Length: 106
Picture 1 (cartoon, one colour):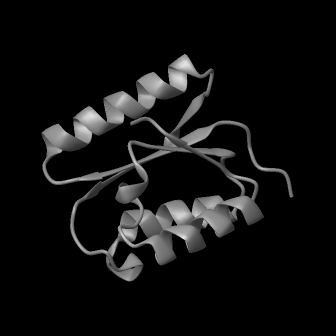
Picture 2 (spheres, rainbow, N blue to C red; picture 1 turned 30 degrees about the vertical axis):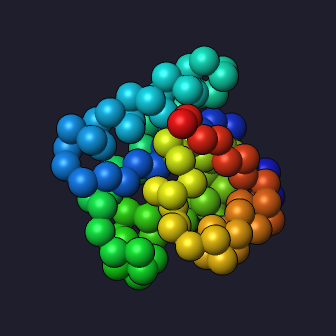
């Protein structure tokens, strides 16, 4: 299955101002690198649990990933995905399996 062209953005931070700043950085990165952000695949989540099951926005993004709805994922840093290296490496394997390129906006 081919993924839809375009990029998703996932931001996770405490407070709307921090999420807005992360979103701006991700959008700027996408623009600078020629990635077209799909507006329906911008995911903003409040900082909280590390457990994936307690992160409904992340789970929604995961469903879109599995469905091939985007081919790039832009985040401000890998730590917004997972803090532990084992979980992060597992997630990177899933991205590779589904041919999703991970971009960090820094």
